[in-house]
Figure 1 (cartoon, rainbow, N blue to C red):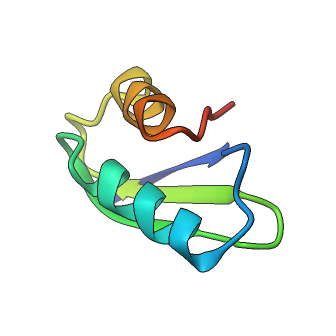
Figure 2: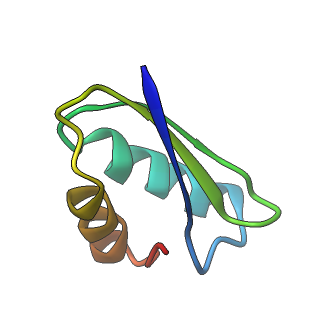
Figure 3: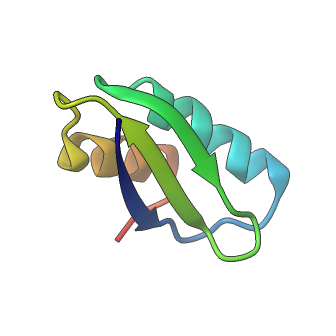
Length: 67
């Protein structure tokens, strides 16, 4: 499976990590979402039908804009 790496802003606690994982795993094609608490790095393991823009939109809606 492919992986995409992004950085989410505003990550400062485990609760933030949990919210990002929940929002990210709801996006079509996302299989696993891993978030590093110390720097906001988000690694998404996904299938071919994954759309990174949909993922960014989901994170922004959860309050964690990604770049």
